[in-house]
Amino acid sequence: MTDAVPPPDTSAGDDPRGIDRSRVTRWLVDHVDGAVAPFTFDLIAGGRSNLTFLVTGADGRRFVLRRPPLGHVLATAHDMAREHRVIAAVGRTGVPVPPALGLCTDAEVNGAPFYVMGYVDGVVLDSVEKAALLPMELRRPAAEHLIDVLADLHAVDIDEVGLGDFAKREGYVERQVKRWSTQWEHSKTRELAAIDEVADALRTRIPDQRGVSIAHGDFRFGNCLTDVGRGRIAAVLDWELCTLGDPLADVGYLGVYWYDGEAANVRGNDPTPAGGFPAYADLLERYSARTGRDLSGIDYYVAFSCWRLAVISEGVYARYLHGAMGDQQVEIEQFRVGVDALAERALAAVRRLR
Image 1 (cartoon, rainbow, N blue to C red):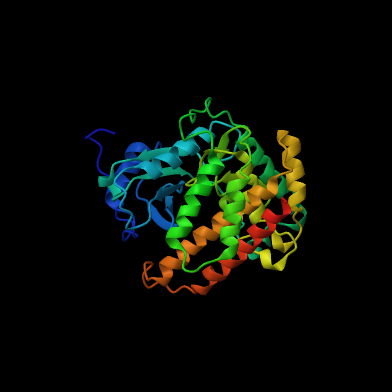
Image 2 (tube, rainbow, N blue to C red):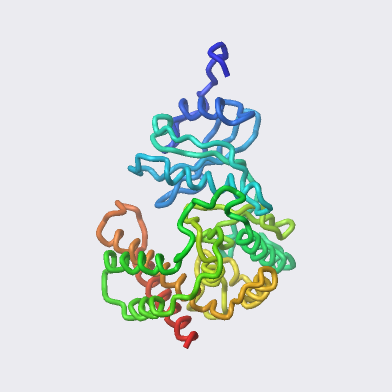
């Protein structure tokens, strides 16, 4: 654009929290090819994590804008820049991700850095109720494509796509165990023997890291868009925990969000208890066949993932308990119960290693 072009119409309604309509509109028109003002901004997801907005242009074209949560005080574009860098790099491979369209690191525009990606149609399968949108005969194909996508992600050449310096390559699990052990000591609200026993077992049995890959960090149906008409993954989302590391950590984490027949292990944001999905063991066999990786020690990574989630949940529980989360109406006891259940599940996985 030049100074001769009139400013875009920004009168599409009140500013939603987290969006400076006038400045963001100008930035979109200037930096996103083909973006036509005025825009509407609708919050898709928000809360303790990054805020996600659906942006619709005057011509009906849709985008997605991601920014830090309100009250975020980080002065740099680190988080947003990392996410944008990852999806831009992965987007050059066969792994399905939304197209990266632009990154704004100038906090003057919207109070915090943000990035924009293309809109991808699909359903986030994050509950048993959502699973009903996926026909029974497509549930196995969708699950098989999910594990295939993970295998393809782990096959990406990190140097070739420009992520070779994204993070440390070695010692991923060791660093993670140390980090979350420290976090537990800082956030625990009570003593929990299972957490301590699992932490000791994880520290003394750290497996050799066999290779390095892009590690998503939160890979599951609930962080993907699924094409429910074809039983295919349309796009992998939520890359905020992404790093470089041991690929088996992602495989073990998926097991936490996969129904194994035990009612005590059901997670509310896991669609697989709805039925029709293959067993976790079937996914492991498919991943191993596709990648050649030995998964005989996968219980270590399942234990690690359950334990890490337990520590994270305890931190959330502690913040609610001490009033740090404001006056949000949340049944906080669910976090305490969830921590106990995850700790016991981690302990069971660790004991299977012996």
